[in-house]
Image (cartoon, rainbow, N blue to C red; front, top):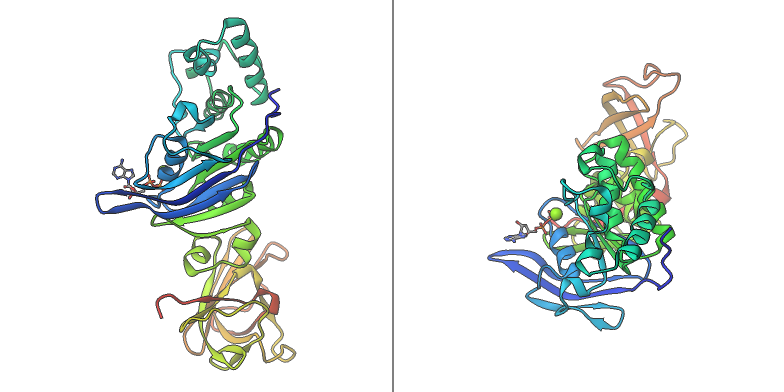
Length: 362
Ligand code: ADP
Ligand code: MG
């Protein structure tokens, strides 16, 4: 097994900008990746994730900004001198070579002797659980195995930094779920600083120590999975990660309200003109009409109930027209016992689940 003994390196990105014509692929990006951390760049297609990864790898030179690995400025360092491993979505393997030929390719480029090379190849294949697969041809492998070969090749030099660009997106869902856990374990074992790119929010939540949410070449928020989900900094992050409904609210002294509903809060209220209450459907509760307190209580009518197998989704509208989504557990395999369309319901939100964010459109 490969075991990282040489220690990982922190990455410091400062004010990096990259434009293509009028497109700001990266717009003044600053980012610190801690030594040994698994950090994910999460964002929609075209948001600048690959560009940032290419800047880290050295294949793209930014217009301005600085990049340090540890204390060393890297912007002018050639890719092959950066001590990084890379894995891409499409594997980038040589189909006519064997597994061992592919994994050992970087060693041949650097003229490592055969004996040493064979040892390293075997170790790398063991690490990705492909021991004994060295003689297979690439086209005899499944998608998941191909991606492991690519991974083995990327760690053959035991790099201190590993960069992965949507490595699992070509795999089907079941295999992807398993590989996410495997990659996570591999990271725990090797301990190298890892920057991972995905557009899949669940994958990001599953794998990461921290997530940087990227949009239009900017970092919208950098936080742990839990903090991103529970305390999104803005509407883009709240929308992109998980499901949520938003209600406009107004200031009432120290508190806020939506129409007649006063909200007891626990978090901070942004200093902006417009404010939104963000509600995660699984945090909204069906409450008892007579015993629910006045605060954090919404009197609504059911507009839709959807059976979704492992849970149900209910939409209910308030007198003012706004709609709230609620997700609940299925009881006895059916939604028959739930209030039907048109019936009144009381929805409640615990104080701990009230999140107020800025309404940038107001
Ligand atoms: P992502 O990986 O998040 O999908 P990219 O980093 O590939 O996004 O691209 C960010 C933006 O920069 C997109 O608008 C893309 O079209 C543009 N872009 C990226 N690379 C080039 C290039 N070589 N030439 C022109 N435009 C590019
Ligand atoms: Mg990309």
